[in-house]
Each structure stands twice: as C-alpha cells, then as structure tokens.
Length: 636
Image 1 (cartoon, rainbow, N blue to C red):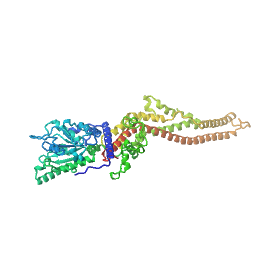
Image 2: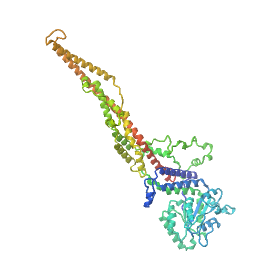
Image 3: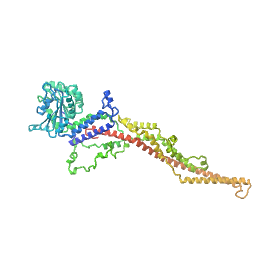
Image 4: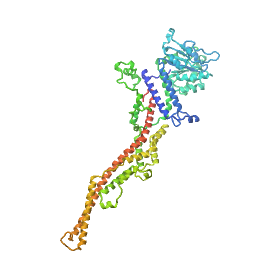
C-alpha cells in the first residue's frame, strides 16, 4: 500500500495549495495575453504543450482554467467528505464491489448484461454532503446514507462518499461523458479491472496513463480473483503490475480482490479508512491535477534575464512564501498562527489590518502604483550599449564638437586682433546652431543637429532585443522584441529634440572678453597712431632735423619700435586669451555633452527600456509563479 504524502498540518496544507492555485491563476493570466494558435500543432499531430505555435498553448490555458474552476468549486464544498469513485468497464464487477463496501444492494448489478447507467452514491455521514452530491450530479433517488446505529462499526469511514460510476465502455454516450467528468471531480479514483480485460488498450490509453501523476489519489483493483486459481492470480497481478509500471504508474497501489467472496476487501477498506482519516484527499487530488498541467508551462521558461536585485523584488512581489518549517518541526506557535483569525485569541491577532482592499491599489495589469521601476529589470550591459548606439545615431559627439568650435569662434571675435576680426567676419555660429531646431523641413538636412537615421535606430534596437531576449523561448523572445520596438518610429525625432534642448542658447558674453576687446583696440589705435606719427614726420619735413615733435627725425625709430611693441603685446594678449578660451570651451563641451547624454538616456529609457523592462518583469514573474505552482509546498 502506498502511503499518502504528508504536508504538515491541515491549515498549512491548505495554504500551500492556495498558493499553488494562485500561482497557476497568474500563469493563466500571463499566458492569455500571449496566447498562440494551436491549429498548427493540430494539423501536424504535435503535442500542443511542447510545441507552442508562437505563444502559449490555448489548450493548456483552457485546461488550467478548467482546473481552477473545478478546484475552486470543490474547495468551497464540504471539506469533511472524501469523494472516492469506483470506475471500470462493463462486467468488471464494480457495482458488486460498491455493494460489498456499502454493505447493501444499493447499486444492483445487471443480470443478463452487466451495466451501470446511473451514478450511485453511498455516504458515511450525510450531514453537509447534499451540496457536494449536487455538484457531482448524483440524482436524489440514487443517494444512500450509512448513518444508522447498526453501522457504528464503520465509524472509521465517517466522511466517505463512495460513487459507483457508469461503465466507461457503455454504448450510451451520456455514460461515457459522466465517467470522464466524475473521474476529474473525484478526490480519489479506484479503477476496477477484471482478469479478462485488464490489459484493454482503451482503458490504459484513455484513463490510466493520463493518471500517471495521481499515484497518491489513484488505486487499481483487480476484481473477480475468485474465478482464478492462486497461480493465475499471481500471474495476472504480475502482468498488470508490469503494465502499470511501464505506463509510469509504479507508485499506484494494486489490490487483488473478490467482491463476491470478500477476499481482499479488508485491504481495500483499510486503504479507504486511511484516506478518509487523513482528510486531505481532496487537496491531494487538486495538487496532483496541478502537477499534471504545470509541466506544460516549463517550455515557456528560460534563463534569468533581469538582474538579481530586480528578481528579488519580483519574488517579494509574488509574496507567496509560507516560511513553513518541515512537517516534523512544526511548532505549536506556527500551528496556532495558521488558524483563521476567529479562532485566535486577542493577543494573537495580527498587529494591523489593511484599511482598504488590495484591488483598489492595483492597475489593470496587476501592478501597484508604487511598484518597482520596470527599467530595473533590464540588464545594465545591453541598456548601456543601446544608449551609446543612440548617442552615435544622434551625432552627439559631432554636435558637442560643433558647440565647442562655435564657442571658440565666438571668443575669437572678442579676443583676437581687431584686424583679424575684420578679415574673417562671420555670423555667430552658436546662434545658427540654436536656430537649427527651428528650421523648416527643407533646411533640416543642413542643420547642425539632424534626425538620426531610422535604419540606424532600428539596427540598435534589434541588437538590444537580441542581447536581452535572444535566448528566451517563445513567446517571450518575440514579445520582448515587440516591446523594444513599440516606439521605434518616435526615436529619431525624440533624439533630435533631446539634442536641441541640450544646445545652450544665447550664452552671455563674459565681461573679460569685452575688456580684452577694448584693450586690443586701444593697442591697435596706439600702434596705428605711432606709425602715422612717424610717417607724418618723414613726409612733412623731408628728413630735416628740427627740435619740434613733428620735425624731430630721431623720433621715427622710437615710434616704429613702440608700434611694433604694441602689436607684439596685442599678439601675446590674443595668444594667451586663446589658450584660456580653449580650456573654457573644452569644459563647456564636456558639460554640453553630458547634458545631451542625459537627455538621450531619458529618451532611451522612456521609449525603449520602460516597455522592455515591463515585459522582462512579466517574464521573471512568470518564472517565479511557475516555481511556486510547481513546488509541492507552494513556495519559491
């Protein structure tokens, strides 16, 4: 006999199951948004769960939703009853076995042609079972109770709800449908086989093999052993055991019984007593059903993408860690805290109670207003490379160099020689650069800051999407790429605007520039005056020496030396100012380049990283929810 799995106190087991169901519901919600098409797999006869056609398998999501509905309905009904269904084919003797276990002829077997057309139920302890019987679809005239004083010897079975299902191989379509439905609703399934048809492929392929993951809530009974000799019983049992092991049912109990003679019934009854006594067959069945569908989601989970910090935040947001110790170390305090609030004392009540329900703080996609920044889910390396690619596409370095050159040219108008300024007069480059943002569409191509080529932007985003989601399975690879490209057409204009906004406009001329201009003009005027004085002396007096200032020829060399000195002083002043201007322009270039980088980074964040981060966060949430749903303890 295979022992039922133990998961600790009932309250802890319920929390574990609730966490797994919540996680499965989140997986379905995430999958529905990214649902694919199953038709391709149907046409090729492929397994839909393992061959997603561009998205989550629709049949997998449908099965999961059906399981969630079924589990919710079962958990809302009587938890004091354990539903055990006897299933089998025509002539297997399950109705006789049902009567033998019930102690009365509740389900009369057929005489000429054994067959069961209706579901019969026998309940040990009828109180609270009516809603459960209604949910199972058992007609009132086929319900029987074992609750009289004469049945005190079967008190150990109190809470058992035993079903006799119709024959699975009946020619009546409704009977087959009832077996299919109730075999999914029963907390425990006992499949009754007979020596003549125990190897029937229809039974194994349709019913037994799909129950390979339900060993804890599934039992096989080989009935009618009274028709066989002892050696034949051993042979049949060994052959049936071999078939079950080959089908993955090696943990499924196999009990040889005879409903007519009562042989082996004590072992079957003891098994039922254990199941009813442990009172968690319903949760075990739901847990086994979760195990049967959760494997279909593993093909959609790949490696971790988000940084560890973001993953930790997502794991905390999932918030389904029960922090439960191992069953053998469960303390009395932990057991008390697992009780509902109305069973706790005043000193054991929670310290605080939320003032508003959580759904009032959630958005349509389930995100809280104060949720973590989605950009934190994007790997830093690819994000940095994308920002740098956008900087190159926007010509950020060239614009910064143009700004520095423009500033140097502007400074030259004030600090260079006046004669040089007159020779190379030009418009203010800074003003023309600032005005470029207001140019018409026809002048945009000639503007110092032009739009980034769309092709270059697309290539950068494609490389980014490949670096982030290239190793992810479908549909995540496509969804990450779509998220990254959702605003691609807006990026060139946004980059151009970001650079234009970072270009300083109307920068004030420093005071010392104007002082240098006055100084240069003064030196120039004095130099010109000295040369002019010397020319006047030489021309007016023909070289004759006189004592007056206008006739003293000896002054000519000194005047020329003075003019040369003044010009040299102006040259040295211009050279010194040029070095100072270069240093200042370099500082301004670095400042402008940093400002443009920040604005380009903001564009990258708003138009690419934000949407991509949300998709990556959903992927990491899917991985965490899958880990919770797949864990028997409902924890990460």
